[in-house]
Image (tube, chains in turn green, yellow):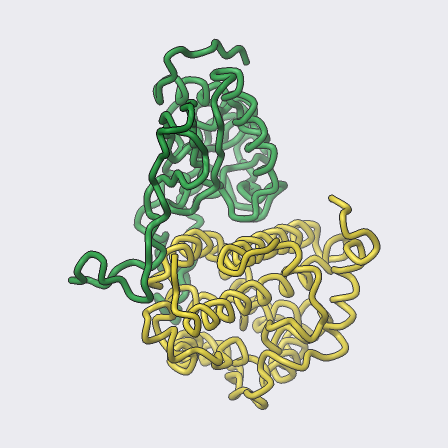
Length: 226
Length: 254
């Protein structure tokens, strides 16, 4: 990964640099291709604290509420910048974890920070993990899906509806308890056949499931659809 | 963010119960690593444990943002008396049928609870829950599959499942133990639905499955006042396990 220093520093330059940060577990796919980067913000400021990426009011206002009439007295985080102090470039990157319990988050944070220090050695860098928007497998780009396949992983199916609430299985199962639909089968990343079977939704990493291909008789891993 | 102190205290209690439930369940699941009946189930239980402890870490994180302090300290530096998980999770791992029976009871109750919290007006909680629900779908499918498999099993499978459900019955509904500040949370829209209402929804959700499989529905909580308190010997043992490294060397990283 070779990152040239960007001057002036722009958000496009940050996105370009992040596109070269590999996923810690599948290095042929970048974190941008996987859709892990939720937002990037570059601004001139004196400090890194208090720079949110939106969604700062913790309690959402009830419908029809007058602005400022928030219950419990909610205030947004301070977004003010004191221009009296010498300004530096501040980069804030919001990352959306693929799984809440993903053990690679610390490695991700370190890799992103290192990459941005190469891009802008004088800038202050802040990496935030956020659930403001849930990461779903639909965030993986077309290039990301191709790179996954080339790495030997079947890309995930597309999610059909919000919240994956696809009632399946027995007629006695109420919608209140959504279940995963395992069909249609994913295509084998080795031979392309769809004659595949889910062996277990739990694989060697939280984000992967284990399948078996009846055509080439190979086991393979698929990105779990979430 | 400013919350009126009584509401904030109630929110802290809610977050602590959510975190402790997932944390304790995750550690019970991890007791199967290396000894589950099938290799796939060994991987599954380890994966479930990692998911649940990850969810707990995120809930402890929300709590730490409100209270200040370190999520690890909340998780690992309390005495057993300070934990607020439900009594359903006080039973030891026991055998596979027992673990699957408890998983089914907990996962269905948790699904109903999370469906309500997805509409919480406390947005950090609603956002986290939206993400967690996508993962819990897989947990529910796993538990549902095993409940049906054990119920249909010949030999000792079914009697073991029935025995496990009977043993868990007095504690099954403790997931919905009323919280001290519940009324304030419901009024503020932070908890969309009282625990009693959520328990009703849960019973409606699982009744058809229990009827189809010919299994007896869980009863009401035998001791609701202690639904999240006075954890017994099995939990004390588990607490000793999961705090062992922390007590030995508080600054260790692993």
